[in-house]
Image (tube, rainbow, N blue to C red; front, side):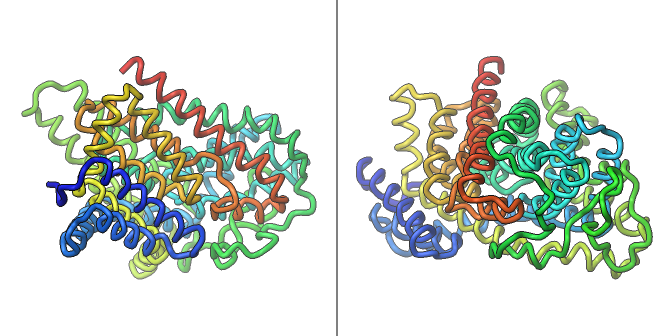
Length: 479
């Protein structure tokens, strides 16, 4: 349903003005992205000559639809992540893996740990949990900090950009109408080699460019970042490698014993397993009336899969660790306030996307892309890169890019839509620099200069973006 009769040129100009308004408000005026997206949608609608009440209606519908489809999943994922931390499950995972590898295997172990914990945890939370243990392990084993730091950061970043149930991929899936199970399956295929190349292998070069050691680093950031990390308490130190207990995550009230390794891993990987089972069943079972297919489709529905993970976590990470019902409820509930901001940003992004589509911008971009012959995957990546460089926000980049290229989606089949989501996700992490909060979080935790952060963190993010796109394009040749 288009809300305007404006010509194609006017619609493109309107879209550019709306995006420019978001960028200026976030970068220059320091307006919160939630408000910036609302105002940007208003600018775009006005420039496209959409009636004021239609602007409000379009934005409101998009906002509500996004909360209903994406917000529920973010909230459930945050609950799993919080009780994992409160119960000491994250400590168990790190202790077990690090305790079984030698010095040479530490970079690979840190990448594996980050990938596992990166499934339910938001990037910033993962940094707060993992960076102190990276520092302690590097200090204890007397190895360059980047040898284990880059693999850990790469594991978190790859999962954040490519894998549901993180907000960016979920929004792109919703905006483009992609199949979540197929996106998850392709995401795993792309994420694994990308993590290997941009984590442990890249770390060998980064440690030469940034030859810092952990002997003088504190467990907390060296300066204020405004991220709230200082209020989160010290993050996790690990016994497996002989690391001091000074950085161990404080356990929640009532916890008398940490969960076992298997229990912790099952709780955080259960949604992925269920969603993958659904995707495989849909690809292999032809009988739509099959009871097995119907059952797997139901339990593999994202909301059901994540709800199952919450319920399983309540038992294995809650009651089995000594918490009573009140304490379990308190732990789960305490994970929700921290995601209020990201929920509002994501929902406002849904409203912004709805304005793009309802004004007809998506159709214009789609028609242009088909006529130009440019690959939709490359187009999605380039748009996401542009917004990422301008705003510094991977989530805003994903939201905006998926809305802009949504007009292309109608001509793509299900596998291509899933790959488009991944291409946009790769573009959304391109070259983090001084306008990205993650840049400063990494800089302060590792005690780096701005130049060192650019040569380590920013290089790693760019590598993930480019290498990930290459694997997406290669996968597109065979599916």
